[in-house]
Image (cartoon, helix red, strand yellow):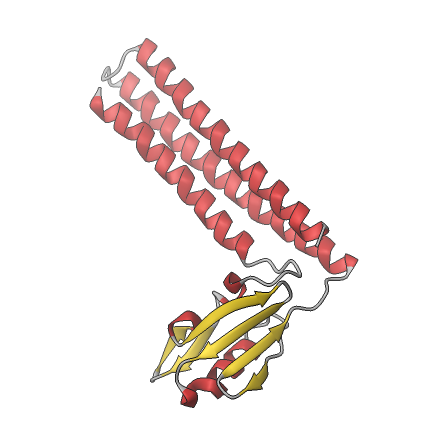
Length: 187
């Protein structure tokens, strides 16, 4: 009996993993509002290797439409600048000593609609991942019942638990999508 409960926890953990990926992807969508997470994917050529930007500089948002990058090592300023320009985020740094200023441009209506489509695509990918986890969980339960390791009643009860976890995960994905859509369209 302990194994089945553990299986449900594993199913929930895997579903939360899909949601965590979605949150990361959504935080990377530019909404016209400055966020330090916008620069998370930027890799800098520093000290002979690729390093995340946040390991060579402090990233902050002093204003709603401005990101500042304070590079710790003066010799890396040019590498950081180059990494930001090459990141395809559409940002052009204005450099003053070791400080880079990134103005976040206004989004036009067409770009907002594109971003909403991308957000929907991310959400659908997360929903599909959750459904795959559900299917795997249900298959395990069928096999356990077939092998007489759990009763029909247990199978039904555990199936209901897996379905409930699925419904909760899908609901959370829909809430994340709704919030992101509102953020994109009302900046």
